[in-house]
Length: 468
Image (tube, rainbow, N blue to C red; front, side):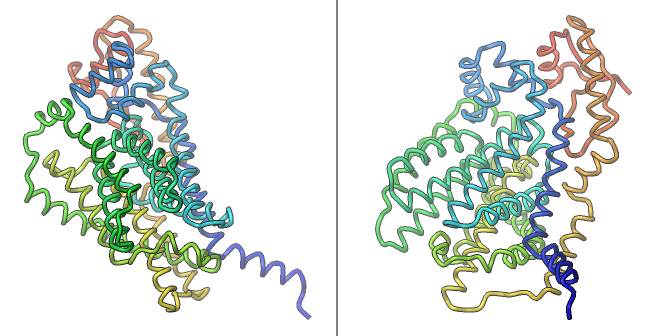
């Protein structure tokens, strides 16, 4: 006779070694260090510039100045002009990354609730955590993506708004209600005014959705057409910004079509080779947890041929890299590649689900993995985590005290600054650099733009770091 205690122990380990529990624990393990390390974050690079312009010109005039002299990103600059530094709050500044992570999670959770009708809450939780794991694992530069205020507001907020936009687009296509059209236009306005990359990719996705809907239904979806027209108008506002011309004049090697297209194609292939293998391993585990809960009516939101989705995904990555080479003549900055990574993760997950429902419609059996195969996949993920990556580096910055020492150095610097009001200020160079939250520091040149803005913000004649 079997012991009931042995059965309970067996059941416990069986639950612990399930794909669902593995993914939830992995997701929580992933998010924790990025939340904690926010406490040690500090302003850097051009975070002070937006605060200074807003304080000196006033909020409204600052928007006009940015739009006509440097940036066409009307929505992002508006948010940046509300920088916590404007209100002299370094505490609020440290909270921004936490708010962004939570907002991203909630937007993804809401997306899951929209895609998977009447799904259990834990499945939507699972979807959100899995998305965040892939995104944070693959993100080219976490510091520029989450902790650098200017980069995070310009790109990460755009990612969150893009998620909310397509939730509204799904609702619009399902119901054709005017309120969802209005909200979709509002979100399009915000996303397009955040950064040029999100503008182009959102324009492209909306055009791809409109084209596919027309192909399938053999009629024009006027709600999508109206949304496309507004997207085009907002894009013109960005494109013809006087600030774009001023900024473009500082870049000598831009607008080389053949070079840009060739380099973008190479980067697309290279990044697919980099991202796809682990993505496939991860999605197999995800489907092992998700497959038994799938409902037939969920397929309506993924009723797109997988080949079309794959082509669109490749073109999205291509557009992302092409934009950087076309506008700057070099590979896109890390913050831009972060946004490309976000769209890749979203596109890959949609591709996986479209493939799943495509096979189910064809009444072909979907891959079911055995427990031993599942454990091998677990090991592959764990081995990947053991190598240097954003998650392991964030834990290392916390455990070895690098983030703490970096923050302590910054506090000492602020004391020196506060004791040098109205004077020339020389501060020590930072010794401790956190790869997770560290961004470009001021230089030994007091005439550097970053140095000038910091000097103005703190009421100094000038500021620089000590010569070595």
